Image 1 (spheres, helix red, strand yellow):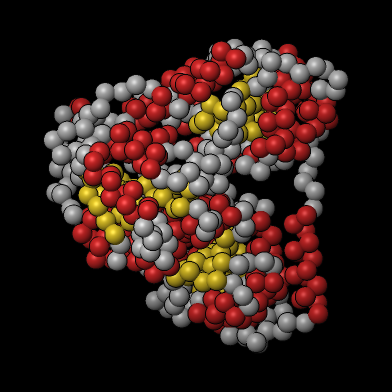
Image 2 (cartoon, rainbow, N blue to C red):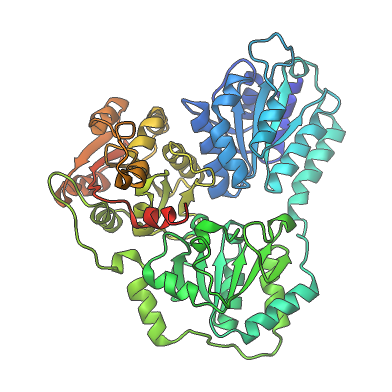
Length: 550
């Protein structure tokens, strides 16, 4: 056994079930060792795609993601996806070969690259330390960090030893997953309980760090009469609640924005309360008390000042606050039958009237997405790319729960959506995967269509095609700037998709979507690409809102 095979065995022993990557000489043996010990390897067509697949898999499965890449260019190809993961605090291990000889063509400062994008660089130092070094990387990832575990080529070849001591280390690391999180202070929970007990219109905004705590947050919200909202990455967390306002921020409907902005106490639960979630602060009333709960102390107040910060796991804090309320009777707050009816009728964007701008061979993206929402099965996972279009699938496609929406937007890169949908599909094989892409992002990541076909994923890929980088068109066009650099001739994406082995349909009007229904009623033995020629006379509502903050 070499160090390379030892590392693979340790990770498999720690519970790693799935690995994404592109195999080269520097990661060949560690990848094969993972497979030999029970892990599934998902081969991507580009390391950038593999990185985003691993990121999305970790987000949607709740497991530590693993990415395996070659030294040097394998790692550099993956860096955009790794950056997105690091900014999102995704629990991810990047296994990368490392050329330590300065004259090697593959030699770069891989540690510096990792640090530059917010990832944590670690290294397998030697055969005697290989087990402990690998376990350290796993522990760091499980704590919410994206970790680069460098595998120096010369160290990989050293003889490794799987002994009883190594077995004990691995068993101990697996058992540590059940360790109780840090408890919040009694003073902080008492203060938050006091604020909520006196609130007339409390609103909870739950983020990534609250996706495991629906039961606890809803129980506390019922005690104090709070309305419920989420950041974009936690969309679906409160689906089914009559008090669910959906996403807080630029995606919010007018009714949702009004109700969030009317809060007298606004609590961010595992939520950054950044400019997107608060609409550059406009969703926080001038007299509102702002509270932030997060398990990381450094996250408190990182994006805006808060009146109270509580450090602790969201579920534990919510339970502690409910306990601190003692025998106080439950309060309705702003909850009334009339408000419940308004939320049911106005909070969803499809309940907001609009003028259908379909015509001249193009379909209104709102009409397109509403039709898809009605036709696609409810048990779905939606992954979106970035761009002008992305508000439409985010807000007009419903999802069943917090695992129904994969939103890789922390770095705001386009081109990640298709790979993200693959990772989500692998994590949730019982759901229909839906990838929502712009034409720019689709063409950036189109090589991964072969991966979708090869894996046999029954995926629906929807491309919102305005033949442009729409965000730039609508940002700079009104000022009279030339747009030749951001507009493009028509591309037959449906025909390209057929070349990869997909079924495909071009949609210019509502009636063309009958092909989607036919595919759904069929065997779904190959993915379907919906090439939607969308109207684009103006920017989407969320983009206009975002530009006001520039």
